[in-house]
Image 1 (spheres, rainbow, N blue to C red):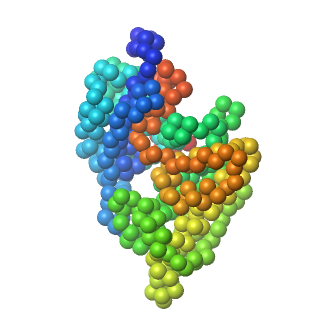
Image 2 (image 1 turned 120 degrees about the horizontal axis):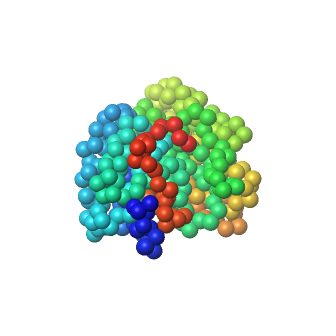
Length: 330
């Protein structure tokens, strides 16, 4: 009980959050909704290659302690100023998640501060709501590992639609490997730039099943046909990037609009790495709304910490003995 006393004495909660569910590892500090620091490192692989869990975990191990020090320095705080330590519990890649969980648990013990495990998906949503001031949005959560349409209903976040196979970000990443598109700063960003030069639209499988989408068949089709089409001069790599992007995003807009009608929502919130794509934002913005609120998430790694204190000054603490990461949570 005594380690919770600071929460009752102070009006502002200062939370340090650690995120490392994929190839980026970051540390952020938030106090009462104000961003004090936000530092990160990205593991970048050569063109044509993805990032493996073991190599990614080694990258996180090399950088995470330095990031904690840098975050405190940037925020001009000492460890004693931190009220709680937060970390991504999952979902994500197992080995990188485990690195961050161990560091968070260690800091919690060293600083004698409560530990808060945060759901990756809810962290994205709560940070997006904080930044945009959205009240009751229909959320399109699109990243390398997740594709879901989510809304808050009856005191819970509920999934109204999702991918039934691979995530949209994974589809883009794998296509980038096929064309040897660079991974720096990210494959999705480089596909977006290539797509701006595309002029020929190649028809691809468009698979929407009720409120769910499927990308694996589309990916198999383009992986099979792309080398032949480019070799014959039917289209260029830029044309394929354009065609893939337009098809994927049209599917996402369709199921999001349907969820909005079901929930009687007038706001759309796009979160996750793929949400940074300006073309996706433009297509979503064409939905006619009474009040249109449409934004990308500001790729900030403090959203883990903000999710733990945005609703309450006393976060629900995770026992240190069970503070582990999981790839299976939703």
